Image 1 (cartoon, rainbow, N blue to C red):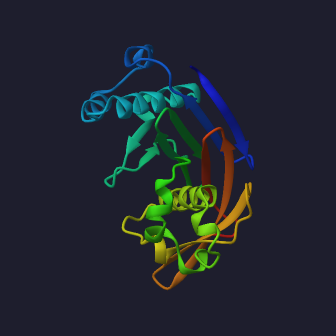
Image 2: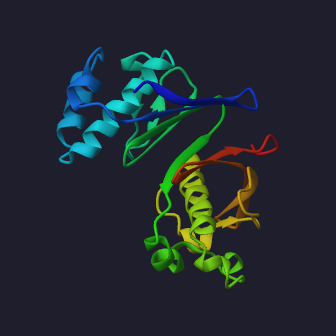
Length: 212
């Protein structure tokens, strides 16, 4: 299936999403894969992960990103050689990319009950004050996608999700929000965006205009 969702946010960021229902060979058809890309593909043992990797490549191609312009840094984070910022995400049968003129992070999360069990690992104390919400799958999925997106946008490994990443209070099905990263005695604010689909949600983080 081709690109099934796209959106421009604030004239700076493009989102693209792909619903994966093709075979590996169908996804690979028409793609130019470099030696490095083929190596990365071969290291993905799961068919789901290989198809996700190929779907990301399809999305990049649909946004006119040439194969050699897509690289990975020493921490394994993707970037574009033309100076724009890139973030990618893959969950089950959905792949997504975000391309922006400023730091950006994107994440997908299906609504699963297991998130209630692992919530104490990523919730900040200020996010845990409402006892009803900490059992709410949709709320927890909002928080999780936001934190993953912030982590990707910040691009410094090793952040503690429950202590160093804080999401301001969110309402049900909020489309926007604010997130903070606490790092080396400073706080950096990010703008958050949320989009909701059948069975899953998407979180996007970009730097505020006043962030340096």
